[in-house]
Length: 82
Length: 320
Image (tube, rainbow over all chains, first blue to last red):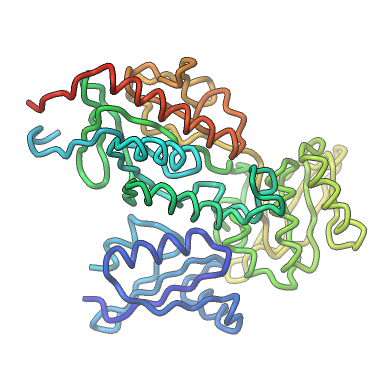
């Protein structure tokens, strides 16, 4: 069960739009952290993902475990939302 | 393939949702031809991840790729096109029906348009795979923001490399642009780039091959090794952005009767029809395409009209 979702994005990132579109289509609510608007949170995205890229989707489960999906990767994102 | 009676049927399935696909969908749906698009990546294709498009007609000041993609999508959806996020893995010719295997199960269409475009090629050097998304990138508009006040290397000498390097100047402290042979970018982009060269923000290295991306675990990329005039050279870098050409997204038709050229682009006849009757191809995926967004849109329109002709010549098949 999904407790909450955070999506790290940037203003110009097309793949970020796709993640948001996918979550929207699935009826999932999420917090968006735009690293252009909140550059101080960029390090948080890097720490969670180990990558210098967006989108990064952090899915927190009911038991507070986290699944991190780097990029727009439906093969990983879809099962993470279950 | 499962029970054929339960397989959803469509008039047209378009594989891809870039400019060729979306333009075709505008044309088919305006003619009340029911149309479903399948996109495995970004709606808008490579155009959507391009910072600025300066040569698409109707935009005297240029247009952001993401904005153009969004407008094309809205226009296609306004006439009833449906876009599904998923992937097509195979196409099978069943005469009046074309069977598509997709991540959403099997689907049938009376006609199919393949408009899957291309993706950026990799250089194929040591370190490239290892540091992917941790210092090696193929999307400046996605990942450029991580390199504020950092040194970058951009690899490539064509329009994409120049356009994206210009975009990255808004973040990077300095960019070394490694061009394997000579510059292939347009004069307009080259002129724009000269402004940054004069400012000392960009250094262009002609005749420079990229040999290796070097980095450290936990730190990411530290430098790029290359060869210039037969001598080893190195460039300090926190990140590398690669734009060295395009590879066709045609793997999913490899087992079908569709013919590919030596590189993997889809061969068509002058009506944009492939070796399978009723299966068409348009845009960057088509052998001989000019790799321009305006051309892709034009081919999308042509393909839609040819699909209409194809469907008009055939009675609606009855499901078995």
